[in-house]
Length: 212
Image (cartoon, rainbow, N blue to C red; front, top):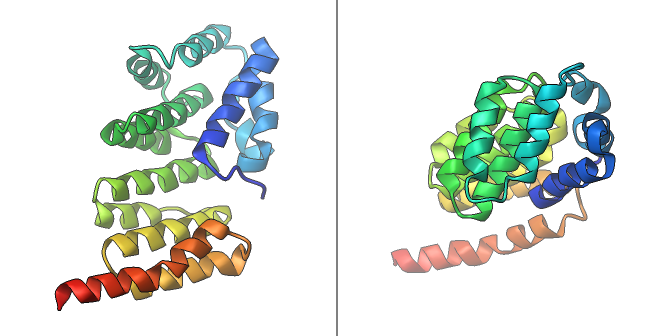
């Protein structure tokens, strides 16, 4: 399954297709994210004949960078429950909050996306991102628990990478190595994980020296 390597690329794909397709936003997003979610999984999220909701989503998306943009996005997501619009809004809002170092806000938006998504794959995407944020906040046990609820096999590499990051944070370097090795077994050209793995020995040495 093809996937975007960064959250920024995922967000920009959504916004880019919106601009290009106008009123055909759902078709545009469906095509743009087909490789990430799978067309059938995304198609399950499409709610036909709700032009008012579509227009509201457009307004939220266009104003999300404004001063009250994230507050309005949160309200829209709550009001529209488990619709595809609401879930996408929560994912985009989480990314915007993280860019502002509002990790508690990002956590809230991702929890909403994971809870409301009618698609297992998209819920798992939100859970992987949520685990990253929980680790960022120092909630390593919660992050691991969140990852344990991810069921889509297509996210295995991401789950293992985040686990590796968590184990580095908890100074469990042997477990981190196992996790990173699992990623490289599937993605031997993943330079980011290669770098993380190569830094483990240095990190372990630093910790050992500090305890002596």
